[in-house]
Length: 194
Picture 1: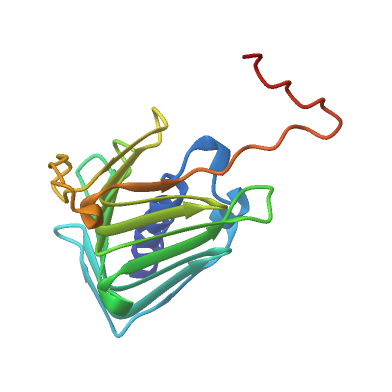
Picture 2: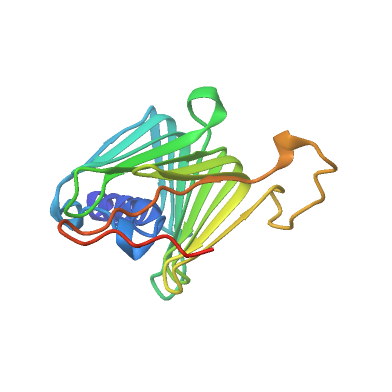
């Protein structure tokens, strides 16, 4: 019973990645059918509150998915929806990495705290947040991704409200968006005439 509950809790962690990027950057689907491997210094399961705590150098792998953190807590509500929170790790950052579906590209992200709510399908990255997919990346103090609407919000404040940077470049949101190449054989667009 406990083994089944731990596996269910860990499956929720996979959602941290699968919901973390837009549909064009979907996680490797085959990962869901792979065995879950977990390493931690301590695992605590509370069946009454439906809370699972994984502590101490937590390394979660399932197929191409890897999550590393100092602590991961997974809770389940009365209707069966789960929430996962990964915190801490090397240099104080929880990290994930996973191969993108059908491509030889990887998704990577890090933050001091990464939260995923399976009911709302929203993933949030708090403090020193960075998400990268292929050559595209965003940085800020807060990144929220809604996988239903496929919308990102990135702010320079960990409470999701943008604050004036006052010219302080270190408090600005940063994004790198690579140009999408034209399909092979397509004629390049002519530049606009002056």
